[in-house]
Image (cartoon, rainbow, N blue to C red; front, top):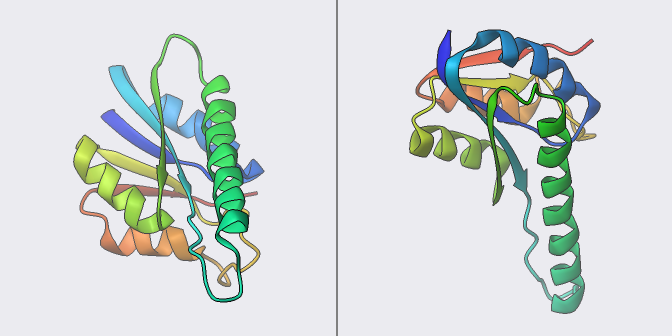
Length: 141
């Protein structure tokens, strides 16, 4: 049993499969942290700042929706905290895991990105190879 579990989500349907696993792994009185990382675009010579700002707002709203939807799937008796950060997903996941001193990261093998690697998503792969603590990789059906 784990006292503190980090559950990153990108809002894909695959992430819902992790809820049962996390619920069974958390110790009594433990904490589950649901994290969604919003990407952030920067302006370039070909894009207007106003347009980039709008896209970034949409990305953040999607991340907020993802954690809210995931939180609803957990039993209300569990201690669940939500968090939205901006940045590169794998880097932020590893950073939050350290900051929050989590015992376990539970992550899907792949999410909603269309640029999957053959078997393992690139974010999951980076978390697996760079995280200091335990990582549970959930393969999607």
